[in-house]
Amino acid sequence: MKKGSWSLSRLTIVVVVALFFVPLLLAAVITGLAPGWLPWGTTNHGTLIVPPRAITADDLSPLGEGVAAPPQLLGKWTLVYLGVPPCEDICQQQLHKIRQVRLALGKDARRVQRLYLAGGGAPRRALDSVLEQYPGMGIAELPSRAQTAFSVDEDDSRSSSRIYIVDPMGYVMMYHSPELDGTALLKDVKRLLKASRIG
Figure 1 (tube, rainbow, N blue to C red):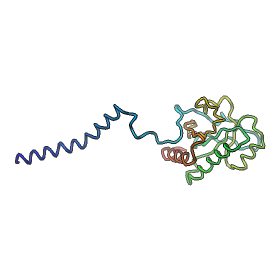
Figure 2 (figure 1 turned 180 degrees about the vertical axis):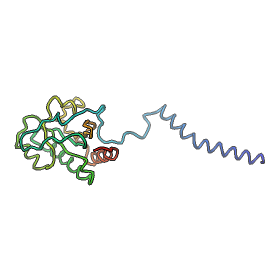
Figure 3 (figure 1 turned 60 degrees about the vertical axis):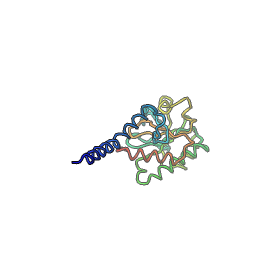
Figure 4 (figure 1 turned 120 degrees about the vertical axis):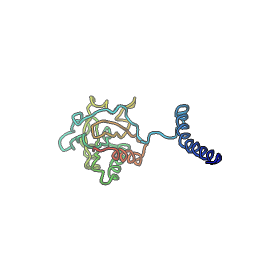
């Protein structure tokens, strides 16, 4: 083999090795020296609750004869809204958002249920109005002993108008503030359904 061709072969090997290792080295340097610069992050739109908080159907109280019984919280994803009847503008917007997101899931809608948690002493007329506008939605009361599962900061969970997501194991794991639109909620729910083998 000629000396020139040996040098060319050696140069080729060095270039190939460099093409492989330089990006890895660059990524390691960027991660170590400037982690805040990284362009990627979490892909969820809602806020994760860490650690998730457990809640069961036993934590919920039925709201009287003729009112939809609390759903079982195990085995399905649950979109939850906490409110104080009567259900006025922001409440109506959030319940409408929950309904439309579930409908937009198509065949996966069967994996998701809706739950309205009303404050204690809710007037029956207000509950009837919610049931009439949103048939098929579970309605229950959340006793004070169970409210900590939804308390994620100093804001009152009932007046925050958030939509909470409860996973099929009964854990409150994410919430959406009212500023987020239905598209953001739909994307998060679709992603969770895709990643989950249960529910």
